[in-house]
Image (cartoon, rainbow, N blue to C red; front, top):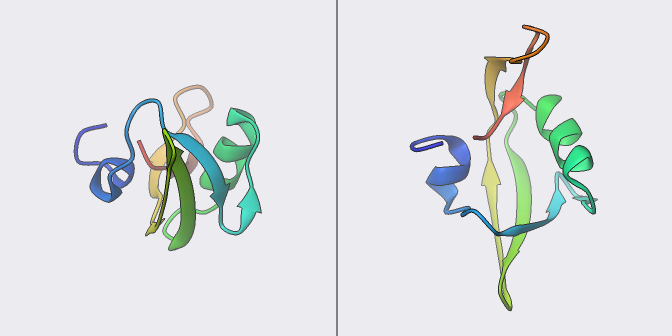
Length: 76
């Protein structure tokens, strides 16, 4: 989302997430699980765009989950 944590560190559509909070990521579900439990915590994230590897830290925002209404971490 425009202005969200992912946008602010430069993540773009099509980037491949390689690791989050030191955990290798191989599926979207793994990525979502780590982000959801990391609200308000600064966590390292590493991603690949074409042949370039990027890394930064992100702080997931605490937001209501669209399905359950429970508050979870999200980066947009």
